[in-house]
View (cartoon, each protein chain N blue to C red):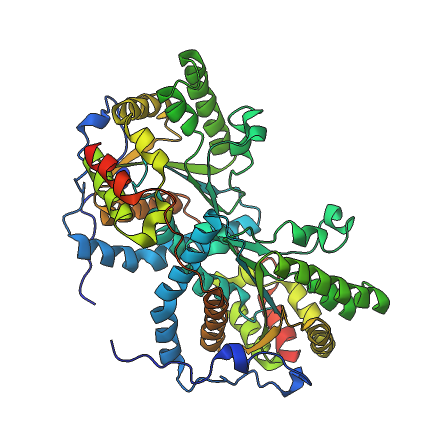
Length: 284
Length: 284
């Protein structure tokens, strides 16, 4: 295999939301920190699968031996932005035993009868696990704000509640990686048309998608407000340009690898006498 | 890519348990129906990933539109036989959103206070899903029989209960694929030693493994009895020689593909007017 094209700059830095962040200044076509093309990106993604899997296995092994560390990847985006592709192509490389995936849909009656974080708490990852939220508690400050499902003071209460909630998860050992996949309104149109033009994709198309698309600008404002209000040191946001699917995948792969590497985990040491056990096995 | 080496005979037929089956006559080193070597097997596994994923996506799509079909893969085996590898390398190719994996451990106090099928029922796959059981209700007629945790008449009640339970699942649309990964006692020794010789694998080693290994022959008898008593037309057993990991993987991949193909699923038809919707998107 020829040399793969690596990131010039770590996406954990270039895509991290900082002070004065403006979503409107992000170019969804851009590929920050990466000069390669689509073929390079795909090659890089495949080349790092093994490394990602090993990092995840270390986390899982630590969890078995009482380590508190765990990871939570939160994916938010407009429809068709590629959350599903991230789940299949990035997280899909990990050992399914160590991954806890939850796709949050419109809340049930039972869920609506509780605080908005009730259903979220139940799905937070256990020690050693990688949790992935396909949509999340952020829907409660996005669609709820856009469609007026909650008054503004309730939205603001939720920002605070989210920050406290995420801080508590972090204190219990959770590394939180928050990602907004950012596509343009034009790109969404192309992707909706592509779904309509392929009978194998009709099942993915919902006539409800168009209803939300009408509010595109309001959604962008709601994202801006949510990101501003919940971008904390222990749970910062990353806005990933996603018009190029291949770029979004390698970027998120790096964000996850980075977070796992930050744990600096070693394989757990044996809690038994290896040599003695070896003799027993030999004799058995 | 050169031509991949395919199965000469479908493993769904060659590995299926029939009348007069004797576990002791299966050669765990053999590769029934396949003449290729390890490299060929690995190539075949990778070559069919895409097909498996498409079949699974059709199932998932059908489930979204009310189709009752679902799949349940039950994996049983002695320790180190490679259940985890099947989960990562075969099922791992599928979209994680459509896979429901459950590894059954020793039952909790709460689980013990219920009938043995109570915790199993909760984990059965929903319509459209592929369920994977890493160990299962069969533990209740294997370790329980070997270690005398239940009297023989209770074991026999459980065989009957299992058959009725699986029949009910089948009637609700579940295709059940039962697999015993079959390794030899010598191969297990090699694998236990390999774990002990690699510090990155110490966490996978349990001193409890040796305690069960002592009862190897009793386990083989218990498997023989369980297979005989629960090999039904709607949920037949497949004994997969597993001394060669690569063979076990391509064999299980084929069993799963076969079961999915048997559903003969088409992509769901659009429940909306495609042309009209296309015009709306164009204008939006």
